[in-house]
Each structure stands twice: as C-alpha cells, then as structure tokens.
Image (tube, rainbow, N blue to C red):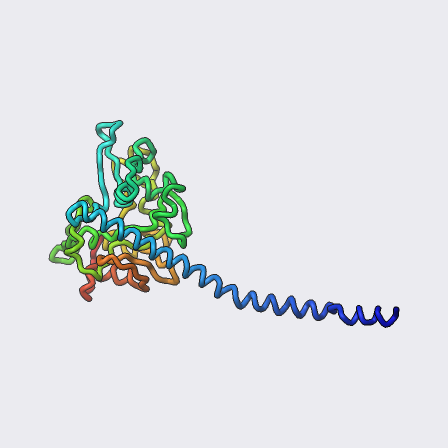
Length: 282
C-alpha cells in the first residue's frame, strides 16, 4: 500500500509544473494575439475590396442600361407630400434601388428625409451593403463609402487666374466613365466620423426644414475635402485610412486597390498630373 501511494504521488503534477505550463500558454497567446488581430483586420479589408467590386458590378449593369452613364452623385426630387420641399438622395439610394429592384428605398416621411441609406435610417437593411466592417461608427453620418466627385462627375475643377476655386463638376450630373482615366478613383472608404452628413444642417439644429433647405450632403467628397482633418482633427469629410493605415478605392476601370497616403496626394494634386493644385476648395 505504501508503494502504490508513493507512485501515485509521483505521477501527479506539482504546483510549480502547473504554473510553468500556464506561463508558457500565456506567452504563446500573447505572441499569437497580434497575428490573429492582423489577420482579422486583413479579412475585413478583403471584404471591403469585395464590396467595392460589388459596387462595380452594379455600376456596370447600370451603365449598360443608361448609355454608359454613371448615376449622379446626388439626386434631388420634390417631396410628394409638400410642394415646396425637396428630398435629396445619393448614388447609394440609386444603386441600391437598381440592383435590388426596390423603389421604397426612397423614404419620404422621415426627418430628415435626405440620404436615407447613408444615414442608416434602416441600418439592418443596408449595414452589410454600404458599411465597411472596419468602420468604428454607426451613427447618422455613417456613409462609409463616398464617391470622389471630381472623377465621378467627370468634370474639370476650374480656377481663377490667382489659383482660387471658380467652379467644378456638379453632383447632379451623370458622367461617362469611359472618358475617365482608369487610374482615377471613383469610390473610397469615407471618414466614419465626418461632420458632413451628420443631420445638423444649420450648425445649431437638425430640423427637417433646415436639412431640406441646405441639403447637408453625405454622398460625395470634393477635391478640397479629400484630406481635411475637421474641427477635432479626425472628423473631416475625407477618405479614411482604416485598413492598416491605408484606404481601399474603386478605380475608374472598376478594379479595387488598397493605397497608402493616396488621400494626401488627392488633396494636393486632385487631377493626378504631378502638379500641386493649390487653393482648391469644395
């Protein structure tokens, strides 16, 4: 009996051995967690690029029906309930309605009624379609993909002799994508904390009247806004480097690509001709 009892004690782990095993497992987890986190973010970035490709497929089908024209970045129509009020929509509503054949995407009775998809008025409906999985906000301004108006609109930004902004492409016009340089970005990850499109049109409130009068756009980014930091340093209406310090873009030839420091280049050289475009404003 004494011999068997001694043997059983020798076969058990000691406290020191258990603590050693726990320490080794903890060390391995601490080494693996950053790799797992990077892999998770890489998966989100890949999903984002796939979503941009989905947009490209929808836009290609739209072009075939509308003589090679992209939908306008912004669309305004009268409110059927009120003669003197207009409702504003973006390319997201137009594309979603076309791809899914739904007309009730154009919500008429909400406050504010503008940009229903970009503002996530029905988030469960559009969350997986228009919101990047790496975006941190899910607020009323969560338009996480926005078009870059100078290239989407196909227009040339005009400048006065002193270099100041004099006009540019209209968000209400369609454009022919085949006339665009394939290296120019059409859509990109937008800042998910942008002040533009937050429902506060007048600076002091968010009533239906102020929003319908002033628009409070959240469908596109202008040339001068590509890298504006905003009032807090990170809430400007710009592209967002949310994927490993880079941004995903859909280019005019409908290929998706991750680019680093590209938004800064657009902010100083909107037409990508290697010449700095000073004083270009939205």
